[in-house]
Length: 116
Image (cartoon, rainbow, N blue to C red):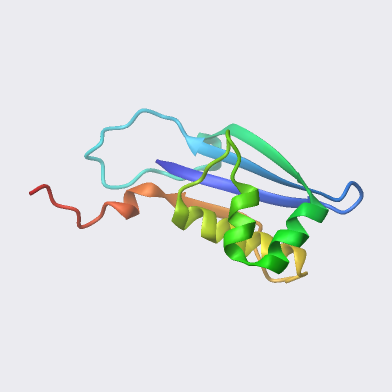
């Protein structure tokens, strides 16, 4: 599945928000690639965090931050959660060159897998 996460910090409210989008179009499983046109993504979940909690987790380390970012309803897989945590850390540390959008194709996790 193709997924996109948009990460934003609202300095006025001191809230971090993460919006999760996914391509929900039905396609053949054997198709090699999917078009990643913006219009094909659908918002599936939005979560918001207190900036104070996020900054405290960043000081503790990436595992603590991932633990805070994961909720009962928002639980990205490990490799994607690590990328999101890196982007959140960079965003809150003021990295001006950091993109606040994460794109992820979970099919990359199973490349090379052979039934056996």
